[in-house]
Length: 474
Ligand code: C2O
Ligand code: CU
Image (cartoon, rainbow, N blue to C red; front, side, top):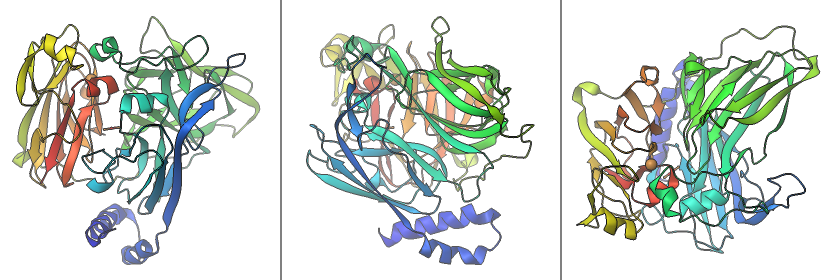
């Protein structure tokens, strides 16, 4: 690690430690902070996705599992992750939502050479923010993530809320054939032009609906991660009243989910604190209601006969803030970000590789999405936006298309200033902003992380079909 990166993380740690008692002990603590070492082996494998008599499903696994292992460190610690590529394709691993040095961001051609089959690459970084994050392949992303190359990364707060259990639920969906094998149409143009690749089988931690064993009045921290290529989830906890305590890793004042529904777009994370208040011996469902005509039972919470305690906890559960810079709106510069294309949109022509092409011509090249009329085509293309280091940028999103777009910028988090019709989102800090059809949203961020970063839709087929740009922070 360079000296420069070291001093940045130390400065951040100082800010993060504002609430700690003995400030003078921090540098010593940092010098002593251990490095967490992990090895991820990416390789073809099989998992029991559907129940017997269905056979195991062929996947691309991480350490023989999907999702891959949970990588964990405490805020301020360094992680060193060796990624061994035993897949049949080149790959990289991107650390989604971590505001780390550009060289460790895992974008092929832009920040590193792809890791060729049989090769390995060592990532080393110190996550500045506590919270729930995830890692995933960033080469041929739709297929590699769709086949299972992803996992969860948790950065623990030095001071954690009191819970009985810390639980991770990775939401995903799979397009399976009658033999429970993944349907091999990752280049399906109809998916690209519409809602993206939706599966026919929804899973939590790669298991179809099963029981979640609980105790009455147990308090859990539930980390939800949406790893699906395209599906938005809307969770209802029928008999429970969860608190949302963080979005995309960034703490919020504890709040009940808007309308009783926890909405979570592709790549987003939501941290909940849930008091499981059902009676011993009872059960209560958790349902995905994003498509109201096709609700899906994700899990049945099943209470054992023993209660955890006679009544639910009532103590506080607020997370300490992360050391993220506050946008300076008085000096901000505004940028339009118009999203257009796809079926039923009004994109007639767009710029591709410096040339204007008509929609029919674009579609023949597998392209049908544009940001400000410009079609993305590879990860090391010239930057479409350039920000001065330290500047506050306001992005004014307008979704002119008929489809949702979870827009993600690497290396930064946005603060939501406004989102059409959704005042409850104001103030959230997100790395991925979900824009519904026709939505407008204004977000601000401090461009404090130098380098070339991807800025793309996280419906992975949309990204591949053009909704991708590079932004530069100089
Ligand atoms: Cu999780 Cu470039 O994305
Ligand atoms: Cu999109």
